[in-house]
Image 1 (tube, rainbow, N blue to C red):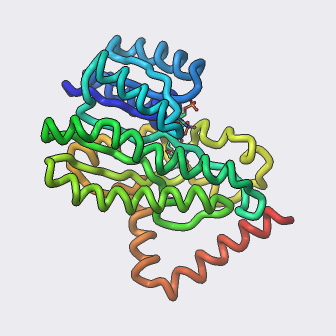
Image 2: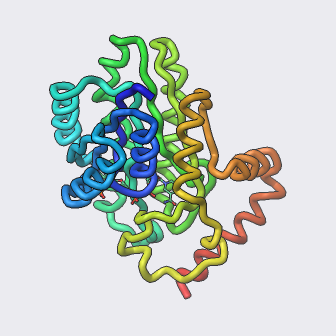
Length: 264
Ligand SMILES: NC(=O)c1ccc[n+]([C@@H]2O[C@H](COP(=O)([O-])OP(=O)(O)OC[C@H]3O[C@@H](n4cnc5c(N)ncnc54)[C@H](OP(=O)(O)O)[C@@H]3O)[C@@H](O)[C@H]2O)c1
């Protein structure tokens, strides 16, 4: 692939795997993340696959930081052909136990971060009349999960915004894709609030990071709007919407049992 890609959250987990697969296919990849040490380590590891990797530090939760990142990218390279808005994090806390700073940060990174980065490169994509924007949402963007209400709200909004954007930007020959993975084993769960959670049977079902990367690359090449990983989650969403009177009470029992295990 002879393209320039920018992956936010490219220093870890899904983003890093995507970067590795893209570098192996011949692309040039800019990885963007917040913590300099993890960024430097990931850039060094990925450069063993290809020298065409660069790391740029940026907090997508901060508008000034995104503007600085944009300036670095445009002055040293050019507008990316493909922007993958993948940076994100979650906390394992009920709304009642959350504070407003954490809530604002969840929305700012998971939703506004994708909007800030898209806004940063959109004028150049529009001028060029081409581009691809991929938003890494989650199954939490289509079904509710607890105790992650704010994360769910951010990911639901990310899916809704992506769908609107897809229609608006088709006018400029820019494609928009959204990916909804289920649970992926990654450093995502190292956040302090996940450390003391009770073991849950549903948490045993995990997807390999490589599967998410493969599905994302396929979604880009086929320009599929929404991709569930695994695909069976899409079926679950469809059945839940088609037969809410049947599925919501069953799903509600699972959610209530999660809440009971938190307050036990
Ligand atoms: N793991 C799952 O089960 C799962 C399931 C569905 C969807 N997702 C979504 O997939 C995406 C990637 O998650 P992952 O599992 O790969 O998690 P991860 O291994 O924790 O990676 C998260 C990445 O996002 C970056 N990041 C976080 N906050 C940032 C900020 N403010 N500015 C810039 N970069 C920031 C991190 O960089 P630093 O290391 O520098 O903080 C890291 O590179 C997220 O959007 C997540 O919501 C994950």
